[in-house]
Length: 421
Ligand code: GLY
Ligand code: MN
Ligand code: MN
Image 1 (cartoon, protein in one colour):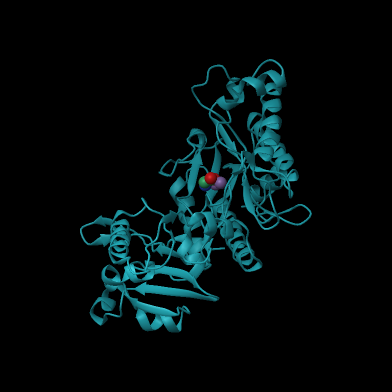
Image 2 (cartoon, rainbow, N blue to C red):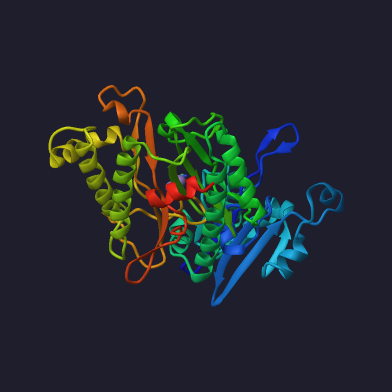
């Protein structure tokens, strides 16, 4: 994909200090991990095409027995060559003196400037050095291009291997939800449910949660990013859980909402049925040629019709779609791409048009209705109820496959499951 005489530079993710000498958990940069499998910090990958041989250079932290006592083993220069298939590897500390050599006589640099100031400094110094040395027929680069234009397009469509990771993530997430439903009873705290999810994910070998789990009971479900998870659940509450395991570097992203006492109230069930049928319609519309926009439109139309039927909105469906008053109760999008990042990369629009789905792309479908406790315009029985139902959907050649279909969402089946606890 890279034209001749170009070089791509992909740094590892930076580390972040939590306090003093303690760091936040490290997670590899998704682009670097996608292309190399290399998950250590302090690295830079350089890729370039030289006539017909494609070159892969990896700058890494060298082996260091004293440091490795604290942080564990490093691949080092030797491992970069032997285990990661680099054509050439070097100590990352030499980057300052040698990087310009990789830029000489190349026209284009693929590098995401502005994301990592320390790395920007290294790259810009190398560029300056290359310009300084450009004479007698030797040249320095004249273009800098965002590497995501290539790498994110590759990541957008998943291969069979990637889908296998996502299927495993879905299976582990399903187990987490089963365990969470066992724990979520009146009198238990949201954090106990979070612990059940995290415990199950890790026990089954997931690397981590793909994002901070949202365990939101009662009115907390109307706080879209409720991650404190510190409320005691009460009889009569719904519990909204939005959580997913990360497996092989791939995210799973699922939401289920259910009554902690095992039985939906009439108002809860009416809203639940509205969200579920909107979600089913939206999923049924996923196929090659559809788009994030078209799926959202299907969900919004179904949800808005239900909001009118349930007394949340007045007037006609077309009026309420036109003035977007449904946003009072449904204020987020229906879908995002899913992959190594939970909100995954890939363009949503191409040439001013919503991008059409192709086999291999994966998206979420996650409609919801959220009625704040304080909303005195809403029927009293619906206030303080927040519901979202979210699944992960793979676009196939002739339609779609729900990767997370094993996680129960049928309301009668959910009640049976919950009552059997
Ligand atoms: N859990 C984040 C999302 O659903 O987009
Ligand atoms: Mn989610
Ligand atoms: Mn999502």
